[in-house]
Image (cartoon, helix red, strand yellow):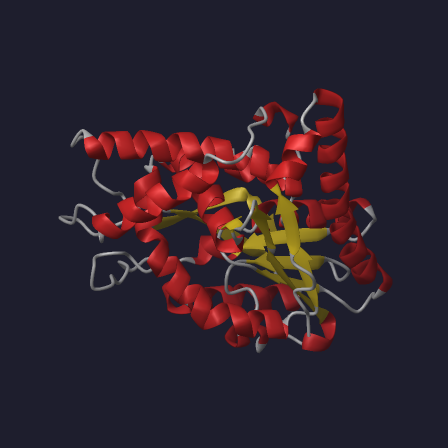
Length: 330
């Protein structure tokens, strides 16, 4: 069973003391090296155990699953263990989502995935049969199949399956757990001043809204308005997944507070200004015909986060290495 370990506590004054190009770049390098050491430790374990042919990764939204999976897969492949990455996001069901009472779509439950298709594909791979891995097109709620994602397995290949429900009992029951490694990833840290100002959940909200604004055409308030759906699912599933995992990866990078938080702050300010001017665009995280699920709550939460973000010193995102997990969010 994995354990979260000690929560990282970062003080605003420590971030301020790191300012200065040389000092901060050294800080970035140390944080990135610490994260990559976690990748190496687990990949070394897999490489030392030849029977392992399945690696399962779970983690809540904005934990860095995509980057960790890519780094881990490349690490094993570079060491001679060819490893194929399979994202559970490509196995979303084609049916229309359910909505909560306030109009938020449910993309979080395991029943929103076509697990039967995933099971069949994993069983084929274990039998040595070729499999075409789908690509899910969220805007059209459809799947396409691309030639470059076809897997023709060899007996020594390893498969990495990642997604929120990558450690679900239903999924793990389809494989020999003696030949599997189970990993849980999540940032576990908080930022403090004279009191706690940004906790581990706040940081993932800020990561998520930064990503959604720049890559998914959302607004900061829209992401914050959707968060109760995410939170409800995580409270239901995450504790069990942590307990199931063999390894825990803390994906919090101390320097990210000076990079992600200021970017998120600007987007929150933009959203609040539009709201105050009566020009806030409709949310893209609710069912058709609904403006926002709970706009009053989302605005109140946005203002709380903005107050916290205003206390954090800013550093240019150019300091973020190209292979950092933070690239998912900037």
